[in-house]
Length: 216
Image (cartoon, rainbow, N blue to C red):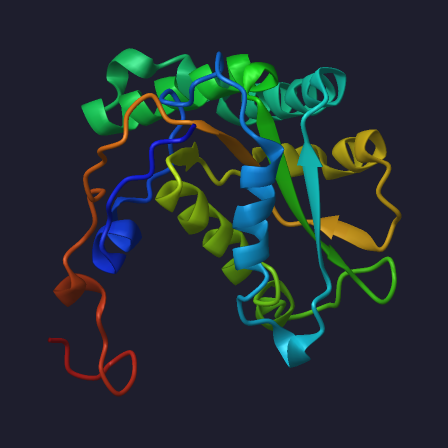
């Protein structure tokens, strides 16, 4: 039985973290609990209410191992130079690099992997700005993470495997017009209390009435 943290809306929004090393890879996750989170995610806004999202939930150990292998190779290709100079990094960056490496090394053991996808009209992504396209999937993806957190689960939103998107698509048997939007390893958390993450003050990123407008 999952322990549901007693969170206010503000606490849920500020303490839903990207959990990498804190995912419990020894404890199974009830698929019905994942479905419950996804049903809530389906209430997210999407373009023209087209509901073109598709959700691939991976529980089979062999399938998870295959995706984990693709992820691991993509991660090492992307991060090799960073990992080679860990001692030179500032503490925050070093910790994130180590946590990310840990996730890549044991991703195959995480009990549930969720792959949010979009089913498109044809095989090609549109040229130019794609904000409207992905706005029909990413809000729901975040809603899933929030719902999972509210139910005692932990997730991390990553897209590293998309450096090898075609390989992952072949493993998942996706048709050419279905594109992946990320990957959310899902597990019970090793802890239930999380703090807000380090962020720049609003005053440093807020522009009013345009880029050159007054900053508050």
